[in-house]
Amino acid sequence: MTSIRRILLCASLQAGMVLPAVAQEVSPAYIPPSDTAVQRKMEWWKDQKFGLLMHWGTYSQWGIVESWSICPEDEGWTQRRGPYSADYFTYKKAYENLQTTFNPTHFDPSKWAKAAKAAGMRYMIFTTKHHDGFCMFDTHQTDYKVTSSKTPFSTDPKANIAKEVFAAFRQQDIGIGAYFSKPDWHSNDYWWSYFPPKDRNVNYDPKKYPERWQHFKNYTYNQIQELMSGYGKMDILWLDGGWVQPYSTDDPPHYNQDIDMAKIAGMARGLQPGLIVVDRAVGSEFENYRTPEQQVPGKPLSYPWETCMTMGDSWSYVPNDHYKPAEQLIHLLVRIVAWGGNFLLNIGPGPDGDWDPVAYQRLSEIGDWMAINGNAIYGTRMIAPYGKDRVYYTQAKDSSATYVFYLSEDKKDTVELPAEIALPGFVISKGSKVHMLGAKERIDWKSDAAGSTLLIPGKLAGKPAGKYAVVFKVSGK
Image (cartoon, rainbow, N blue to C red; front, side, top):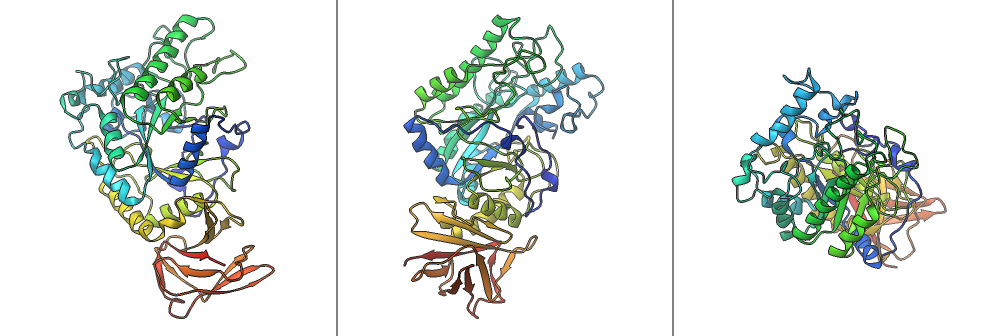
């Protein structure tokens, strides 16, 4: 994972905490897609609201951060640990040797897909290759892959992991997205062995060695072409490593790392018409939506966006990870959707090829809530006053209904309704009907110039009314 400025505050994120959209708000102006097929796919994506992200690779065997421990940067998330950590090159060799022990015999993507479907997830993004360069698909460009004879799992019928994952989720009618890292720290055309790597960037000057850089561009193009042509219908190409982009200067450390996104996107959309391309944190025409990482922007945004966030504290598997409670996850979902975004929730599979049982439990709890309240999430759009504190709003895309969310108190699962709920800045039209989803009682209201107030009937007031958040539907005139 990581955008240009990785934010590792997941352990301190609380249900109500909203962080500034650091990497997103400094980006250039959003450029909407001009391709009508992409425009239609973007409208589809805006309707889905809730997706699954999965970070998985050989690093899960050590229970460490994905890829970053082989990056020679002195940051908190890049620290090396364990018996090989004293010497960088010894460590990197041992890390890359994890390929020879990767054998996730409990891998069953249909189990994941069914759990995601039951939770109400509508699309997914799977890590086909992270920055370390290990490929979770049967690429023909390198032997550093899960289907290599060096990898024990290569003899398993499901060895082409990405293909199996995409097929299982597609069978559940879940939209398909491929995460792909533009930087590749295993490639000798990105981190050339002639020079030691200095940081996350290419370790030579592409302008000085244009043939080597062209080899890397071809490598990247060919791998993405493989994914777009041999792995079924794709909805999203989710590109990470935003530092690999054109720069106006060739000065280190960035250099001009232009991989020709126009050519890549043109090829990909030729194979997958309407494909959404997310060239993260670059701010170009190929960033069809933006992806604040481990954060919720502090206000509604005018462009398409998706919060990507971990269910646990880590993007990839670590033993005994701390998983956010269902109350916090549902509050995040409500806030994100009410402010116009999608919620992409990450789960890291373990070295055995399965999720932690707590992850399944969380998805089940979310699914129970979505079964009652999903209509207030899917296919909705923002409506002023958007919401804050414990009250949030969404509107059906055709404007036939508005939904008012009333959240439980932070760190409490159960919602207890007061006798009145004030809706400042929101006026219910005369003749409208209001009822609570999952209940039969009609809800009365009163209005004045400042807004409306829901009048909760005695049968509901002061009593448990639901879990995490209840929703009032306002419809008709």
